[in-house]
Length: 454
Image (cartoon, rainbow, N blue to C red):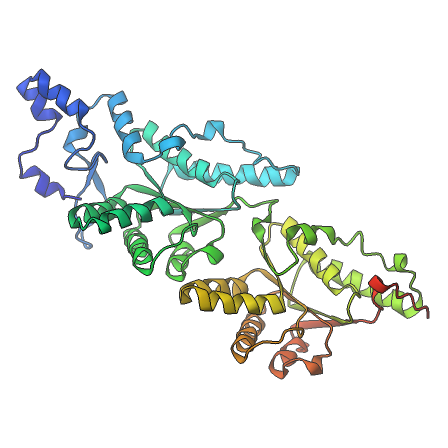
């Protein structure tokens, strides 16, 4: 992007000079032209690249915009925006209930939309919109750009996959000038939407270029909007730290009432977890009496109480089929209903997933996934002790457990092993009375009709 000083010192063929020459042919020519040679249709230029200048990061109208009528300006801004089929998206035609069923979920979604609409009025800093596919992230981001266009201000929208394709095409053509222009366009846009962050497969080279643009906009505090499914799961670690910086970024989750709050590893997907409720965990229905029934009633009350305000760790010990996973899933469902992010992982499957991610993709992707499990608000580690893993995988499990132990982050562990049979470094943390509540379920396996009576 050229600087204002450069522009003012060179002859420019713009609408101004054309009107001065009163040339009908030239007017037709300028109306047919698609791209302004000065600002690439952005209708603005940067004042300075000097980081010490108070005007750094500020923009001025390009000369070509000064004599445009309202409709011409809007047409050009729409062309510059790259919205394509999203050009008619607005806050007026979005479903503010999010197509959700529960009134509380609808209310939270509507409140999230109102926050995003407020950002559209005052687009300062970064906005990160997260949520599952189909919840309206791209619609809302496009609505912000369209609101700017209605006010005569520029905004640029790009899907990450399309951006990477654009970069690759210019790189293959060995057209350095065009390639530099593309990078500059996204660096300097007054407002930029980066849509579907994480929804792409990129080479290291292409990912570095994306990071370069994000870093530039972070340093200049340029207004930027990101949409992604999950920050800590989907994004490269260097980008993730910037997206989570409270000094510049606000994160709005549209995942209320949806599975976007839940990350699963293993056979327990969201549909299975929803089947396990506190209401269908009935100690009496299993024909148990005496100590077995009291034992189940006690663990049910403990799980219900802990789910209201999770603090520290909850460790369920017991044989197969005694209800450990049922209660862990019931707690998971309740915390999701409260808008909390939960990761539910079968430990053997989790370690297999760690190995696969580390071996088949970049180290940064593994680090992002590992960080997700370390920092998630509530982590369920189901069936610990059943794994047979390499020393590398066991070390990663220890690092995960140790991190959450030191940070005292709410965690649920289920195991059919005695603590003495678990890796000593992990067992000592599970048994730590300062953070952990350990409950041994003594009831028999309900799946094989165990109804021993005491």
